[in-house]
Length: 295
Image (tube, rainbow, N blue to C red; front, side, top):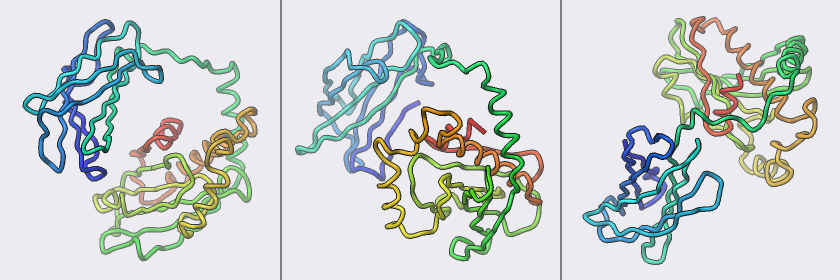
C-alpha cells in the first residue's frame, strides 16, 4: 500500500510506500520506506529528499537526506521501543521552492493507553445531562433549498432546537426525491466556524442515502462568507477559540452543548419517516470524526 498527497493541491505529488502493507509494525521491528516524487506528473530522478524522523509530537531524532535513483529513494526510519507513531517529515527543493510531505508509521498502536482517565461519575454525569436535555422540546424548521436540489435529490436547510429552549443548530438535509426507506448519514463538521456546501457530498443522496451535514454553533450556514469571517476572527482562533471556552468547568464547557446538540440531531434523524429504521451512520473528518465517535 502506498500513500500520496492530494494532487490537486500542488504541482508536486509524493508517493510513500512502507514495507508493511498496513503501515503498522511490531515494537523493535525496523521499518523501510520507498519515496518517489512526481512534478507536473513526471517522475523525478536524481533528486535529493530531506527527512526528519521522530516520535509523534516530539523532536526528531533522525535527520538526513536521500538521493532518488531511478525515481525511488529509500529511507530507513528505524523503529520504536514502545507503542506509538513515528512521524516522518519529508521535503524537496525545486527551483528554490520547498515542497513538504508528512506520513506516520504505527508501532503496535492498539497497545497505547490513555493518559487521562474518566472521573468516577463520568457515566452518571452524562446520563443526567442527557436526561435534562431530552426535556427540551425538539422544534424543527425545514426550508427547501432549490439551488442545492436537482432532479434526483431534495435539499433542505434544517433548524433544530437542541439542548435547551432558544438554542438551535442548523444543517443541510439531502435526500432522494423518490419515496422509500433509506439509510441515514450524520456528518458533524470539522473544527472552525465556517459556511457549509452540501454539494460536495451530494452523491450520497443521489445514491440512496439521507445525509445531514450539521453545524454546531447555532449560526445559519447560508450567511455571507464575510460575516462568517468576522465571527471566526472574534471567536474561533487562538486563545479565544471555542474549543477552550469554559474548559475549566464541565458544566459550562462549550463542547458540552456541542455533544448534546449532536445527540439531538441523531434524535431528529431517527424521527424521519424516510429512515430505514436500522442504518444510522456517523462520519466526519478531524473534529467531525471525534464528534462521530462521541455520538
